[in-house]
Length: 288
Image (cartoon, rainbow, N blue to C red; front, side):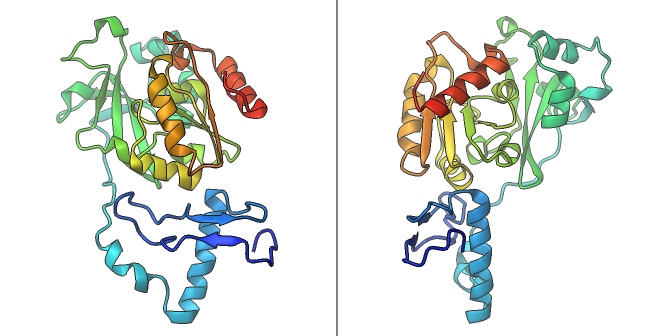
């Protein structure tokens, strides 16, 4: 229905649109047009699924007949709440410690507030480690599914009793990609980074792994929503970056990888320079 092919060159995997309990998805990526590769984005795959669902409804009552038993076993990400009394960044004074921390790292507090809904936790009865920290919300499918609390001090003062990042207890980091809701709106490419502040540094096209390694669920999310991917991990994560390339290249048409020197952190590079590096790598097809 997209490229007008009449030579039967649209291939659909036998488990396409069926719920997979391992990856917690419907396997919408299992479709390939060998005419013009026209079903290669999340929107076209979702649209195709809806078309088939309508046909199935007319023919035999819908795909729910097939998926009913599997969907009963589906595990949903639970809706979360913020850790306590949280104040939006725009409501804080210009000399507040959280604002000064962001400015010192060359972030625009208003931009961080608008794009990523980051706030500041003043008090928490349940999570004392979240107090006096930036609260980074994690959204998926329109709901809050978790958060991370970021210390607003230099890393030199961090220790085991006061970690740099405190993750909401029970949050399944391997089941989500930070900022995916924003990134899927940008169809040209998706950039993979390690942490939320790396996303802030690059911009809305980036998603964070909450670490250095890709989980099965994160691979499934990427192959469902992404067509072109550029891996942009820290310089000391060369091994993990190359593993990510190997894992993704069989699922995503275009994979690019930027290798930094071991002591280089993408989060320390200016946004304009970082974006130039990625865009040059994608356009030239070269590894930098």
